[in-house]
Length: 171
Ligand SMILES: [Zn+2]
Image 1: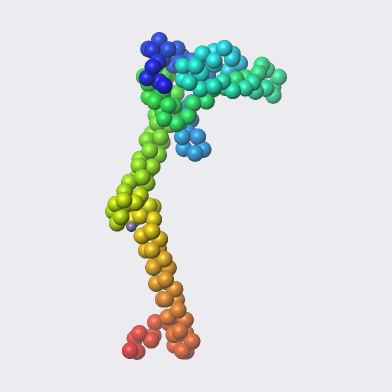
Image 2: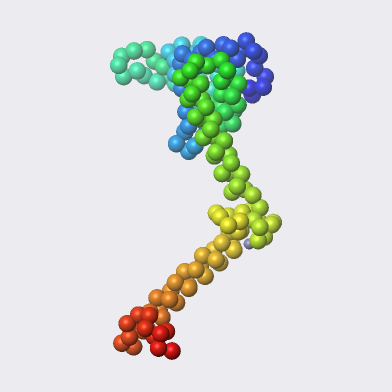
């Protein structure tokens, strides 16, 4: 969507968001641009350019005018932020950099998760060590079983009246 914005539109959006915009990382880790305004017509223009609906009206509990809102999340938000960065003031530029950094780290993590497993290259890589989910679960179960064995062995030694670890010393 942002690729079709003209330089004039981009400049207009930069000025608008400098005044009214909020650049953020959502609780799910997605980059976002939120704008609230009492001027619905202005939001309709902006929403049309970034291809997002105007939501509202939301009442102002301090008795002010109703407010409207346009939200942009995900890759389109990150794309627009990257385009706006050179035009924004210090405070918002700094915030945009933080949001874009978080977005690229998130993307990197997702990329690793979607990589192929080394044990079964047709499967997706799971969790860590490059294993597919099946192999990882097998390894995890084996580790638990081994721990249980150790516990059982120690218990047996105790039942035989020997303090733990002495049996292996005797044999
Ligand atoms: Zn595997």
